[in-house]
Image 1 (cartoon, rainbow, N blue to C red):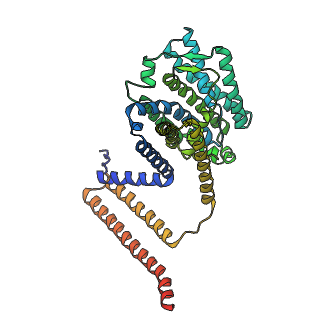
Image 2 (image 1 turned 30 degrees about the horizontal axis):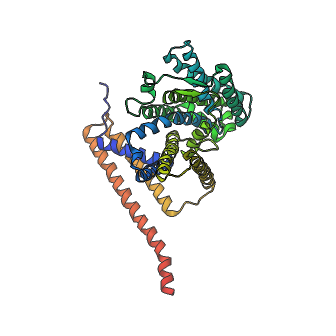
Image 3 (image 1 turned 135 degrees about the horizontal axis):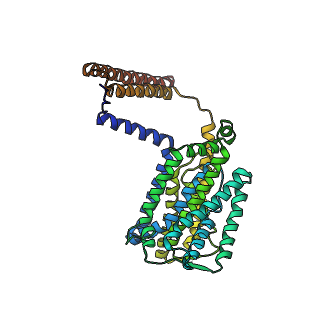
Length: 422
């Protein structure tokens, strides 16, 4: 008879989940927690200054503003993770909306067909960037600056009209912008964030992209096709810009040709604020979205605040100043953090004791889980073995507490001796 796997008790599953969350937070969640706290503080502050800030209509407005920038930020996170940059995403977003909208207004395409067309146009520009950077070794700044200008000018030449008009009050707006007063754009952002998190952290594409950002030459020498994965990063960035065009045109039905300059800076700023390293190798997908949310909250909140004070100051310009300060500050923190991590720090006796105890403790906990789910053991043997492991865990805790007390006592001795001499 084939052994059936015994289910782990709920309390053990809960303990495992807690350890996993703790490990994740310790390794890469601190930055997200800090910026999430900053976001909450900003929202509370602006609400205190003007209670209309968190009214439903304003939440929907912020959601509409967030969606295109967050989606561009998600796409360009893959590029920045390689150590590159993509300056074209803003103009590619608008060019995608303009070209697809032009085909719609002329009756060439039905409205639903503009969606895949926008994504395709974004992907084509992303592919062009990838070929220039990965295959022809053109510096990313130069290559994407060129495609930024090309996308801006080419779309205006082809369309030859100043504005493109998308329908208002249709299914298109309800699905991608405002679903009867519900901020549907935010739901889309969460969905795309989960997809990008899977690609970045659970798929070889993301692992290789992060490896390229950490050390491209070492990655190449290990047998990985670095050109292929760097090209994919730029394609993802272009597709992100194409998807952003959908939400931009749904929220702002009038799309002006030959625009989009500056949009990429807001998206890239959100990525840097979110904790993605400007040098590559470290990426925070969720952080990119939270960083974009911070910029949207600042811009929207300043509008309310300045309007209440009746100051003759444009909130957008104030946002530029604050965004610049925040981005420079985020990059400086990243540089300082990198220097601190590179610095060799001697392990103190207390940290060594803690590390050794944790390793032994977790090894015993894993062994306990294995025993509790081992169907090949009889109930009596399983119970007896489990009790023995629990006794070992308790013994390790006791030894750890005793040694920790000894270390604290030794640390107090020099202070006490110095007091006696005085």
